[in-house]
Length: 466
Image (cartoon, rainbow, N blue to C red; front, side, top):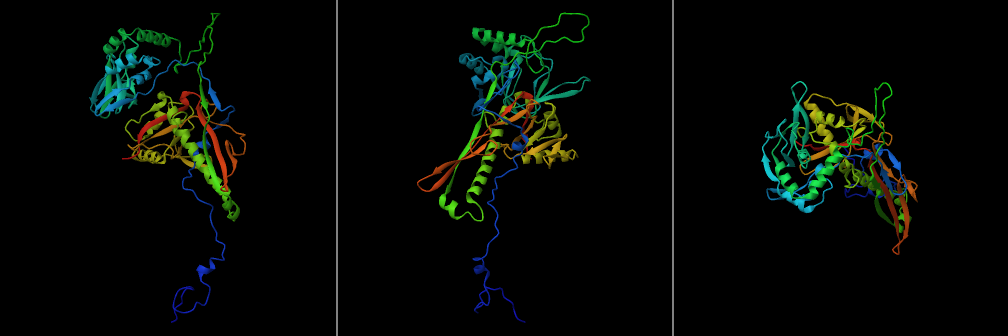
């Protein structure tokens, strides 16, 4: 039996045919264009409706709103001891706009630190509100009595939230809910008596509280906007109320942000190595992909206009138990009309599916731009790896309504730029250096605007790991 050997295999004899290694020198290989692992679907950029703006800024005019100051409070810790930052007390509605640092420091020094165990009651429904409570760390559930005597969940407060702030503006007030610690909690409390003692020593604080009470007595609708007085259901010829629509005198303006880079290509590469692929085109293609990835990241995480940081605090909710459950998603949906889509990290979507599996629920898919995506209540959940995951293995889920006609969230950009290659993105030739390096300036301008507060909501700090 004669053994057959592959050409080119060293057997000590002279080869009788051309080997594959030599043959490749004359062959034309089939090759792919340069690949890039960092390219994601970028669903958010596709889903947002983009408004073309001129002048580099977009002003959002709204009706006058009185309900301001419902923010989050930050703290500083020294070992196990925690203090509230005095200026952060201005996030409490009754103290919003009050800037006397000495008085705020006096109030901050009177807060008392408490440690609560899981299940401990912080406030009892019907009892007098005699303290302000700042949640430093932990989760507290608010419950109340339903119409038929059953216990009803009213929401969850967590790090940076506060309770009992009405005690600062009202003489007599009772808790409308019971607050219990779900986990071990660290809180700071300020008694109403301590607050009154500080107020008695500060004429500026007393005057500020009077102005706050006067503003609160203005006619408002359920959203805190200046009311439009109307009459309905009347007969005869009664005097009709006169009214006008009051506007916010200081509307917010969104300025366009940008992402830029300078692409450099040596002329020798551009001249000699352009077959079968144009080197400059491939360099630009991958650079533009990276710029678009950064754009989506900024639209979510930028502290000025990013969606995570621009959600109204009344539209921020916490999960009831930790992981994202169907109940939490329903709570997020119920806070706005016409929710068009959710945005979540792929790991968060997997955690939600796990909770559905525990309950024997099969979350359906729905068509979105020709693709089948995970959904809840018919609302698609768009995967986005730009949503951050904290060191505690928690993330967030965004829900939004979009479009100018729907008073929703919109993307902002300016088109018609010089050397524009995509809407809002330009590539400008910058010249050739003395080292024969060709430079191109790649620029894109963008931002995002929330037209009304309930257009955007966030389910915060959902646990995505076991």
